[in-house]
Length: 249
Ligand code: FPP
Image 1 (spheres, rainbow, N blue to C red):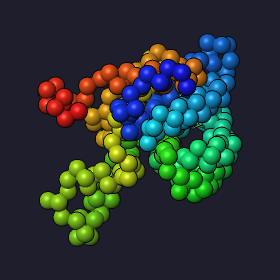
Image 2 (image 1 turned 120 degrees about the vertical axis):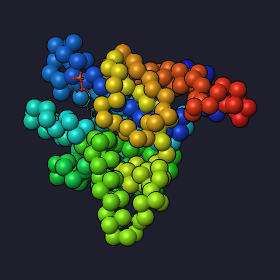
Image 3 (image 1 turned 45 degrees about the vertical axis):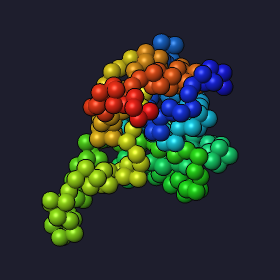
Image 4 (image 1 turned 135 degrees about the vertical axis):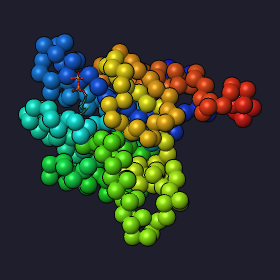
């Protein structure tokens, strides 16, 4: 809690999303196996959750496992899933203490039994917490999410529950995994890669993007505050001109 004092409490992004990248490279640089990077990445996850809650972020979405990640070597996938299950079990107490609600988005049906069980349990037990929503993207792919939304909407049209002319942006939004959450305000990606990698394509339409060279296991509280500070220096115009925005601030 040092430099965050200089952050404006009036311009805290409501919804922050993070692509946690670089665990493997971090481990390799240290001459270790990739999984060593994932294990150390868990401490960054902990710190960023704490930092986000402390400054008043209301929704934090973390890209923990993509649909594409299933094609990694089986051993890495298995270890990641075990790590997820054990972290959830371990962190329940701290989520309760900090009044944080856990949610998850993605094709959760594909998660191994143990990971799903822990996930469901923590989701249930934290359901009434209301300081911040921690939203884990697991077995998540934005294109899959959109395909599923199109299917559900089409079904409603076929069953005469919905008229084609009534389909609008809200309809699409309401059929995404994130239907109850607001758009992303700020997207952070670590490790120097400047891509979106099939993450929240619809939801980041107006998000500010932030890329840092720092590898995920090195991305800690102060790095998060630095990112938020950069967010606060940006002007979000939503297609308008500067003067129109200033008038309303
Ligand atoms: C990206 O690094 C990281 C992941 C695919 C997994 C992130 C998982 C954790 C930080 C641990 C468990 C999560 C929770 C929520 C407790 P990478 O493997 O793609 O690294 P590389 O790009 O250097 O190869």
